[in-house]
Image (cartoon, rainbow, N blue to C red; front, side, top):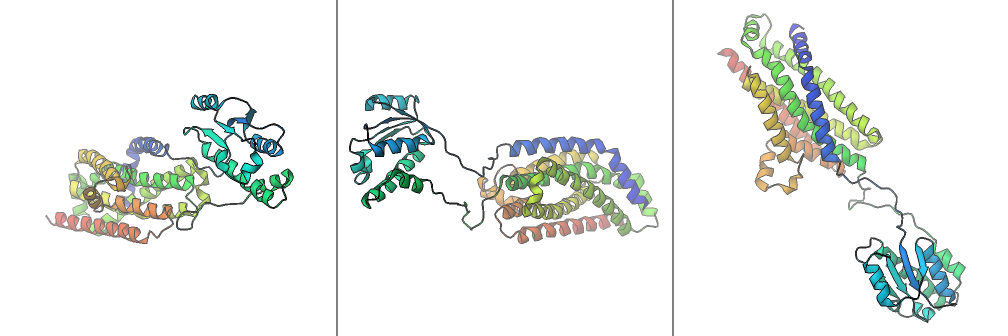
Length: 375
């Protein structure tokens, strides 16, 4: 276990690097998720300021005004149409309604005789017109049935239906927390590349130094055993760092535990983390003990793959050639797998490709190490 202990001792020596990378990760996570729309599970009407011109002593007109007043600020006026339009245009009021003198006849004939003046800038303009049409549609039905009564009309208007918004595939739309989780775990892949290559790169590079490399060659331990100890040390550090990032996600969004999607995100992140660890091992084998290379390599690979694989910019916005290039690296499949979770689709294919990358990187690194050892 000498190799394993030495590995952990070197990692502890570079603990400051972990805190720096953690601060960078927090910054990018905040920047990438702060524009996400907050989920709103309820809907509430926006009270409007309305002016109404209505005939006097008309029961239907009085009941209609009372109906509007339940959700809006309604004022009875006798202003001219031009004045009302000017007030709407200057945002003095949200809308104006001019009821005809024969409103009961209008209710059973042409609703277009009711003048509704609103501004296109008003968010509640469409809802106002829907409320007017709804009221007079019910009034029309009762009048034609010779059963008109304001209490009966109000009973019909107050009926509510429970509705649930569904996505095209029949599932409920993604919750804000689930969407946040997708962005977080996408960002985690980018950060682990930077952290592993910069941290474990310099750590494992110490084993490639001339002094340590000489001791390895004359040691009774086989090359395979030494590499296993290195990988075990890296795996232990990986578990600690991975657990730290998972705990951080739960500290920011504790409700993640309530969603099954979170556990899928964790499963995908686990495979991608091991893949990135294998990639780091390959980089160490290629770069050797040149520690200065790892800082540049972590930045180039981390930022480069983040931009080309859809971490920072949605992949569909990128050029087709860039998208094809991104498929040569595991971060692309990490993003695709997380997107599949969000869309309630199967992510088995991108997950298997991630596992294939992990095995490939490790086998190539082992092969190169054996060739170097012979020379």
